[in-house]
Length: 477
Ligand SMILES: [Zn+2]
Ligand SMILES: [Zn+2]
Ligand SMILES: [Zn+2]
Ligand SMILES: [Zn+2]
Image (cartoon, rainbow, N blue to C red; front, side):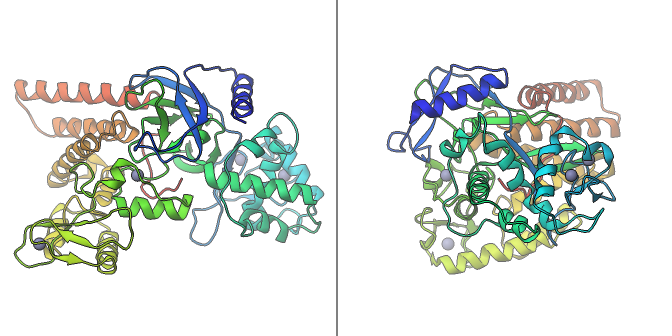
């Protein structure tokens, strides 16, 4: 089986003009390496890598827009992915929305256009339906995986294990007049389950807007998850994914990525992994109640005048008691859940970011500044705020937040991760703004300029031409 898997992947890479020999897909288990949650097999290094080394470049087999709904961002043209103000039904008559003639006639749309047309879309002439839009990924998967060289991936890639009807396929069926053939429906269903288990968020810029899409990357799909992954990846303008080492990787070691957010505390990561990927991560970080001393999960003790923090006794068990490190007060998981919920809604209620207000709220409710949801809020402030519009207090707070988050990344042992590159870049811009606002003496100016140069070098080395230098804080996959 492993030979078949490796040859499928090799053939795919060769088709895309690349070949690699520094790793292989092999059977793995988590017995030997506690940093890895194994899914039976994974990518294993066959040589040593240094941080920054490229492991492989992967091309997506399928790219698709996210499903649309009342709470979703507006649909994008499924061919060019721009958010056109007025999407119109494809003139070809497939009932999918497109931004105009060129996209309707685009070769990348022709197969799916023909297929949906042949199924009798239930849309009037010149109109489109959200249901067909949501089903597009199923159609796309069918056109790529039904016959031809990549059909093998239907067998070799992992699937989400569920017997529930697949949303995208159901959406499609509801919006066509013909009945899907049994074979087509089976392929679509399997393909959507593969997408659910494996797809990555790929981000692209269209007309200065950040568009979040789903991409199925066959090789990267074999990387298992770790909350201290040893790789990071960039996307270029053509959705190509470059996977690089973020930590030193030794020959024989498993190559890992993350399926969740690395700055989230364990309870939130665990919950996210369980709901989106159906597994309980047991990596070394998840097993450590203090998360390598960062205390990301901790809450301040609820006993008055106690300066201790409450940690989960067993972080892998959702129903575990939590306990204060100083006074030994026990707290139930039900109470913890409600504390977390309260902090979440408090943090979500802050619209205009003011450092003083945040401090007041944190003090009033006895919330840690590095605690759950607070770090997210501070990160959101770093991404969303425009340096030139900030007052001095906000600017200095942003600088402090960048420095503290970089320290957090360092303590978590995340190496040359993408977040490090992004925050370094942002910090360099904050210092630039600080430089421009005042007349500094030459000595201070030199210090600032050196900081800027170092931060830029660091971010360039990590982001490496990736023009997506903003990330969404609430993305999935
Ligand atoms: Zn378009
Ligand atoms: Zn069409
Ligand atoms: Zn973990
Ligand atoms: Zn206490």
